Image (cartoon, rainbow, N blue to C red; front, side, top):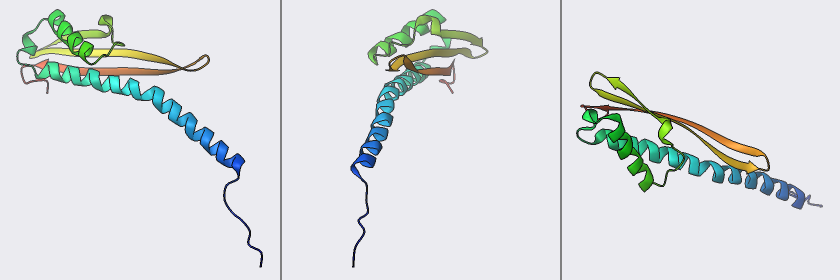
Length: 125
């Protein structure tokens, strides 16, 4: 009795390997963008949790935010990306920035991030 062999051929294995490699490459390009996003969000939450953050003027709050971002090596957020809006109990800090990383040849991966944090007397709730 003949047994038919089953399984992947070398060609199909190479194709599967190429597809997995491509998605791994995209993941390696996206991962640092999201790590920076979480670092920015963490810096904003840490600033909001500081006592007296609601009483700071926007220039001082922006300076403290960028000190925290420098520690985390976040260099895609620029001073023009940070906006403040007055609230009854403090400030609303809004950071909107874009990260562009080259992917292949003339194709780029673009991430647009938008974070809002309240600097209030209640500790950023």
